[in-house]
Image 1 (cartoon, rainbow, N blue to C red):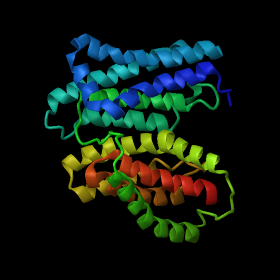
Image 2 (image 1 turned 120 degrees about the vertical axis):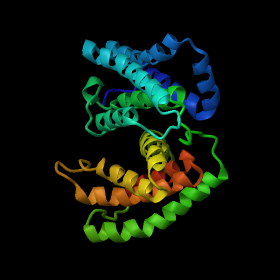
Image 3 (image 1 turned 90 degrees about the horizontal axis):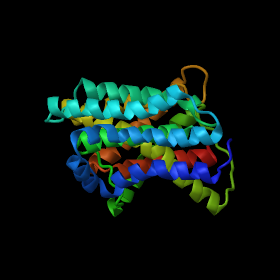
Image 4 (image 1 turned 180 degrees about the vertical axis):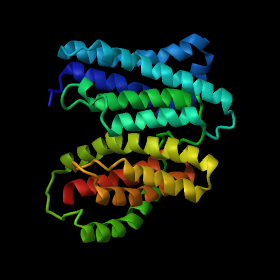
Length: 292
């Protein structure tokens, strides 16, 4: 892994700023974007190419096609979602939303852009895609009901932990029966446990829950009933794990991830608040990391 130099840490911090702005001041950020001239609104996300430029220059890995991609893709996303907002003011979802979700999902799942980044820092590319999606769906499309609000409430913990407790016996019984999970002892320090929990929360559970619950399930629920939207979003979530920990189609992972998605989706939809499902997701992955 490329060392965590001050430059790399600064790039990571810069990438987290847009997500943090939407997480803690989403309405104000969206209103501010709405006051910008039209061309500025559309071209502004092109600045998301700068973290790649800084990283590539520092690591001597600059490739102009990658720079063009990271500068142009967020602009295309913003333009398409502006058109989507005009064509679909009721926010029932249309083909433009679907294309963007498909591209973002496949880019992450199939690791299309990972080779642009230094070894061990591929997550920087995923964070840029999260920033581009947030700007497009929240800043331009102004999609409601996403729940990307990180003013944590007691109910987030209550709902998130409840769904964890409901899911745990199912995954334990089924996971052991399928030979998917293998209990083992582990004695991490409290600091290791806390850092791992935070890492999973911010860099695994948050982007996945934003995508599958805040965007996919949210839009599906406007076209389908709540149960159908939950099931379909969960199946898509499960299928996104088809290539995890295996060179072939990992049907066990797909099955268990689909079931997990049902509980994550239930946590999100109760109050349409992403922190609840992120808490469930984080604890599932965190417990599995240490003891299964």
